[in-house]
Image (tube, rainbow, N blue to C red; front, side, top):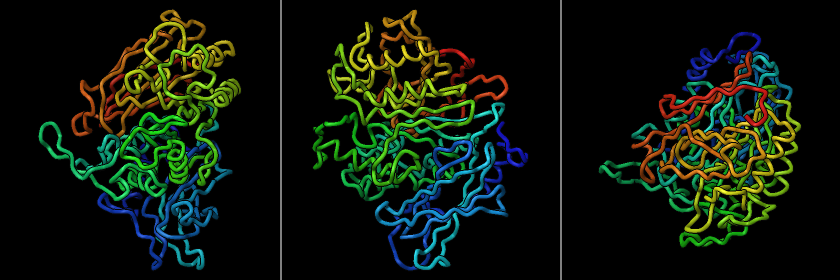
Length: 524
């Protein structure tokens, strides 16, 4: 287990201390609405804190104020904050929806960092609100240190929002108790196209009751509505507590904007007055950059989502964006498709960075599955596969190019992690079963949703020779979180052997499937 060189904070002792500390935080309750931008009193950070894109020596700290304020971060090796280091952050205001990020650098590797955020009146630095505290571990520089992280996606989907009767987003507490080094959210952090109603009647007659807000009463179209959709999830106690103790690596997918959207699309949806997906996606990306600490994004909507996060010598995480650069959804039978699902520039970046990586394991965080046939209407397809088991066509051509590169450039230790389909599964791809054979075998693991409707399993496309040793999915569409468990995946990398163990877990922590992978192999 990861432990700092001082020996003071292992996984077990951290859980006890951090849980006790988080209980004292002044945070909004589940029934709380968005804070008013009042002028009286002192600044308040009722939405909690987050840390993102942590490396061996750096991290990004996020906060939201209830009014204009100067963000100040203090870091220390202990909870007492003795010999604390102070970081002067930005003045947050209406231009970023009162959110701000402060970059920390020069941190010790493999150590538990305690931090607290103070918000100060910009005109009177002595007037500060109550500090909000958190903690995180920097990535280890030591090859022998163990790593644990979780992944999942799909939050507040299909109208299943924060239900106080069920304790809100309970899965975040399940993950927090396992004390991962970080959490990879594989997309659909919000459902901008799914309003949250006050009540839903379940098939057995029970009533599902949601916490609601004004912004989530309709589909998100304006910047304010997208901001409100991201803010909605922070009403959940479990999520705020989780954010204060577990760093995140976050990507996005379609429901940050609209189901199955692609660049250039004009929506055929009567709920919308703004039909241009490019306009909506620009607004969503700006809010996304305001509400998550991501190194390659700016709060003004500039930058990009795809990036590589280096987590020490054992692990690099390659975060993809399969949404912003794709071509239009289609039947996918093209014999030439240079844009594909990644776009030509992102594909070049991914091939280059995979070849440059010296990490033992190269996790490819894909917001969409590779071999599952995800339909978009009656004739078009949403992901890579299109149901034809023969030679690569359409977006499969781009995947074939990437897999060929991994094989011929001898890129070792690649593992694909994804979500999107609202069930959990393990898929192994091998050339001896495939129509396309110029690649090395690899694994793809599916986990989710975090808190959304469950859906039946999709068909596999045979082009890259997948088989499915494990799957757990509902037998009907949109099964509520009250009726079907939610899912998250767990990765443990052993610092001694270098072995990577994947566990597919369900809400409550039960292990459904596990697989041990050996280091040093091309593909896997």
